[in-house]
Image (cartoon, rainbow, N blue to C red; front, side, top):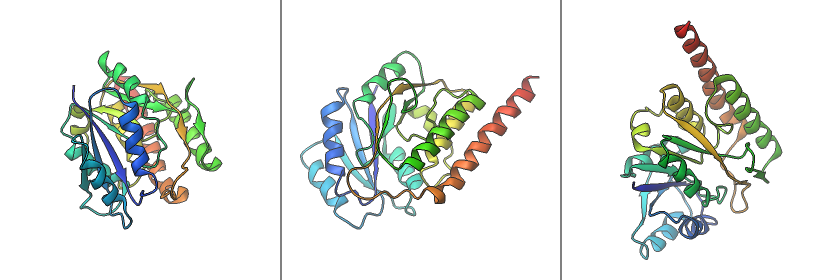
Length: 237
């Protein structure tokens, strides 16, 4: 099956080149890389253009919607003409070597495979402590409360069958889109599992994430997941 790796990037001139290099070095399966320039005002787009000129499997597209992770991801998914789509952050936080492990799970019938920092063999390395505590709490508690197939629902590093993405209407405009997609896929009945991955704190550039600003979005989907679980139990009763 065809694989597209979507990399949303906003002002990532310090990391985007190394991110693409890691993907090309570590992902052994045939793939395309779709880098989405999310209204960058630095050299992100020109760096990707230069790399793409020497690699036929790398493409640069531009988010023509309003700036934001949700819109950049939606743009990338639209351009990802492939059977399988995986999102990789443009800041070197994700371990591209995990993608082949994800593909192995897809091969045995799963529809969504999540990279998990909170399962055995999947450490979180570096990054702000409060952000780490928040994502761990969200992941483990929503896993316990909803029986979703991952302990790291907020992690953006997931692979989806394109049919799953085509069935979901994306509402989020920020980083919480990762939680939205996973929960909607889970409650729609798609098969989901996880593999361990090492999540690394940013070492290049500056984080665009403002924890308290995005907390509202995570809280919205957290409550949506719990309500959906209760509703399902009532319907089965």
